[in-house]
Amino acid sequence: MIKRLISYPMSMRYRFMFVFFILIVVPFVLVGYIALSNSEKTIYASNLDSVVQSGKNLDQFFYYVMNEQDKIMASDDMQALFNPMLNDPQDEIGYTNKLISFTDTLNYSNRLFKIRLFPLDPSEHPTYMKSTYRSIDMKEVPWFADIATNGRSFWKVFETADHPSLFVQATLGSVKRLHSLSTFEPLGIVIMEIRPSILAEFIDPVKQFDNQRLMLINKNNQIIYSTDNQYGSIDKDLWQVLERPLVSKTMDYEGLKSLVNVSAILRDELRLVSIVPLKDLNNPVAVLNKLTVAFLVFYFLLSLFLAGYITIKYTNPISLLVRQMKILARNNFKEDAITNSKLVERSDEVGWLYRSMSNMIREINKLLKETKESEKRKKQLEFQVLAYQINPHFLYNTLDTIRWKAEAHHIDEISEIVSSLGSLFRLSLNGGKELTTVRRELELLASYIHIEKVRQSSLVRIMYRIEEEIQHLPFMRLVLQPLVENAIRHGIADKGDAGMILVQGSLEKGGICFRITDNGPGIPDDIRLTLLDNARETRIDFEGGLGLINVHERLRHYFGESYGLEIESEKDRGTTIVLLHPVLPLNTTDLDI
Image (tube, rainbow, N blue to C red; front, side):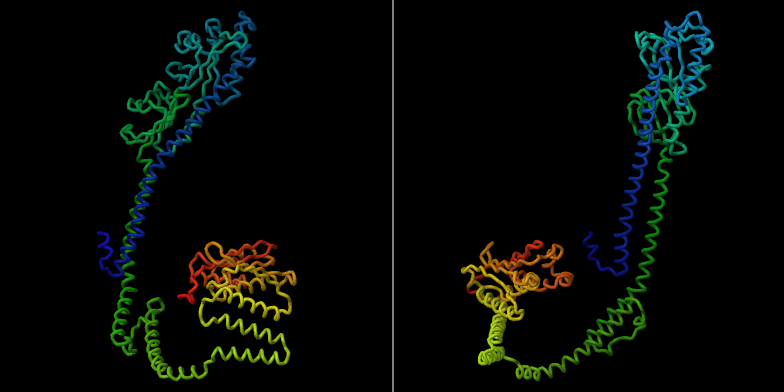
């Protein structure tokens, strides 16, 4: 189906609309869908993370309260107050004043929690109990009897209904029994109550939405703290959700679909519960969804507008240009077949196409005329070329004549350099063939070295270590001379008589291997790494790179990428150019281009 749709002939405007839809609208829809889905997950996860983190903060705070409670209970003042050996049982009023003063001092200096002290046997201190806790008979209170008898510490919610004279609102407290540090005998009861305002400082910042409800619930499913100031027991449906210590679940709560997140505190003694209606959570996503629909409508209208604009501005002029070109082709590109059009005057690409077509037709007509005239002159030029062609043998003979004249006048230096130049010219031409032999290539190199010695009027020290078995093998012409020339000019040019070049040839790696080594300053790494890169920058940065890249590319062109040049160089240690050439059959005389 897709293949048929692609192959179906469509005009440019419909193709543009199709491409626009595929490249922009479809990815936009996919990205929008993924963004919406991920946004919901991110918002839900963010709400759960905030509840979990707040639960951890509360957990740390509760343990901090317990540690502070232990410190107060272990203090010397607390131990002395409840030690019967240090207090006069007859002085009830004095003892009551001491307990009240000690309690007030602790509570006045601390804003996080409130301390309450109870004698282990309240009946022994009726004055203190009546002045502090009024008519409450603590012996009849179940939780007091439990801690006094068993001594097991616990967290308790003190309800207003249970103690209206003590608690204005439900308060969470840590209940512990005080013991003597010396005899470990029970002495009294200490309650560390957390102030409700402190719980609000931990829980209220977690609220992210107006209709979000946050509650602190004990293991009896009673609300200790609530951001909406509604207390009591929680709904039965919510009980089942609170069975696990960490919950993130969607459920119906008070008639609304809501997200419930739960985090356990104090080893499951308490639960921090967050309830958020989904409509509040999804409100940012709903806005994003509306924006996505708006953008889709916008892109659809934009595609229609662009299709119409391209049709009028570009498609129709190009279709007209195609028809004119067909007419020109049928009329053999005659200039009078061009139809005048105002589109030529346009300054955009369409006008440029029309002007280029007109210029192209004129150039074609001009070239046709020139071709006819060139055919007439062709024969004349051939005769002129034959008449003035220089035979290479004439150049050889001329060089021999110069050498003979130099010898006749006893000018040996001119005779030698002319002789070397003639050999160099003859060996480099090689009859127009790309292949020579290793021996003839070395002869060409020797002629070049001799000319360099005469030109520089100085000694060019060069050593040869060539294995005899490769001398007769076929070898590409003009590959050693550029490498030695590069070594002379860029390797030993500044070393004087200390400069030396070593040319080694042998069979290695299944081919003919030549190593041209100089004792020059070496090539910097940044240049060496780019010398064999056939790039314009290399030729500019390093003058000698042109000869090297020429040899390298010729070898790779004819023999493949396994052959060519390698460069080995170290700073102040010289440079070695390694040339790898294949072993060709002995009867090979030339290369196929």
